[in-house]
Image 1 (cartoon, rainbow over the protein chains, first blue to last red):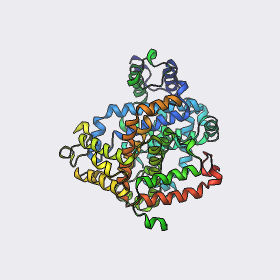
Image 2 (tube, rainbow over the protein chains, first blue to last red):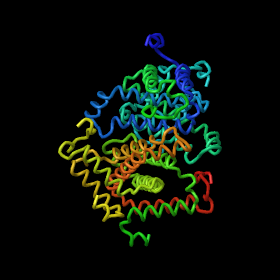
Image 3 (cartoon, helix red, strand yellow):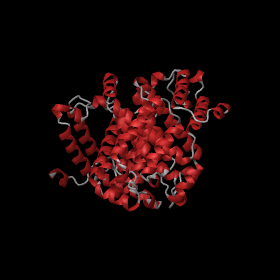
Image 4 (cartoon, each protein chain N blue to C red):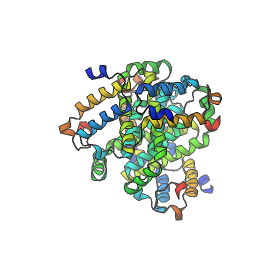
Length: 123
Length: 123
Length: 123
Length: 123
């Protein structure tokens, strides 16, 4: 906990090292194929979504409030698997994000996509 | 690209600011409810997984090689949604990851879980 | 098409035989492990969901109208994988559904769950 | 249980009526929008997949054996949501499956796809 106060804003490398250490202490790399990590990602994302199932409007807001800690844990699990998968594939996540945003900005130019929920093929 | 060379290791805050800017330039916050972002996360994770469908062994390795750029883009999308959702829920992702790893370390003590793929309830 | 008019309401066995024939003509049983079929199921369900992403209210209704054929195809894919997986696991789907509904009816008694979207643990 | 022995092979209409009755007794149609049912489908498919997570080879076979009843229940849930969604969208599932198989047969001709796990775009 003390560590957190002196590391208020970690880098992706810090976080990646952290999850790799957790993995290697348990000798789990053998189970972490890219496909298995992708399965893990989809399972965790679905668990996160399930916390908000069947709810809309005020009921949804209340559910989000009530299950804040679970949502937080599921988000952490998603980030965990993302970091492991990126490491396994040799992907620099910060760079990948930057380049994907550049591609998205071409598909969704500001002037055409502002305030619209359409897929780029329908813009 | 130049930016990347001077920002070799971005912090989570840098990345969060980056995706929030992309969102706000397009006035998309109105569509980004936590539930819709969780849907997005699950859809992107499934797209990532679909790139490795039906493959095992050497065929899987070859598919991963051949589709490296798509895998990278899907990983970037997953991180993108994770950052937006964390921002929306007011979750500090670095702290959430640290605390979740601490919980996991209790459920999966090193000595009991080393080299085993069992769920903690089966250890 | 002619066949359809004389088989207006197929049984699960009819449908299972139909997809098994499609599979065996292509010698695909070798790829259809239960895990791979479950991956397939989640990928197809996510594709179905993606057709309604980012939409609510009237926009959602319009998207459902516009993409009716795609939704239909994705539903067919989901049923396809469900039938293959049930066959592989030796599950009688009709019986499994009947017994699961009986369990659900215990968790969600009519008088307690009527008109409520709560999980049974919150009723 | 007695009913099952005299209804060894139910039709899709029988099953659809069964789940619609379960729904209407609880006045749940109000929560069952197509989007919410698609969320449900993805959540259940992911739960099914999670029962086989991290396992391969003999460990996977053992897990499938050990969790047969849970797998069966998840398959029933998937079929349940599929039937509700088809009913909501006015889709005849048997016909949809037949037509989708015809499309797939064009994309995957027997002679080109036999014994191959490639996507049709790679055949």
